[in-house]
Image (cartoon, rainbow, N blue to C red; front, side):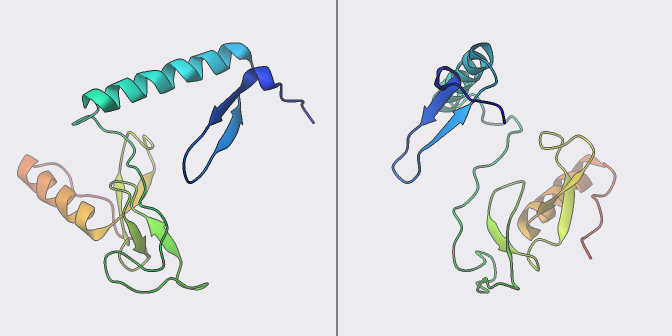
Length: 134
């Protein structure tokens, strides 16, 4: 087992959750810190708006935010990879290619994001989106 040095650690402290992450080296830690600072600066100035980026996922809750079905051991919760909404499998059967998430694998999306993509795709004359999950 590899020893992780505290000199390579970054403490992330929040009101609801705090944690420590370890970089492989001090150089990698410094690169992470620079990227985090840049992301914070862009977020504060709104420069990420309009650019593809991963959504902030809605916090896990007791029920689907689309149909209000309660989550159980058998009725699992999912997050739309396009908007972050908490949904059940029935409300997230569609998949879309989201290149900012993965260049070739389609991602689970909610019905609203799929419908918006279909609307934009039909306006632009692009090929149809990926088929639904079975």
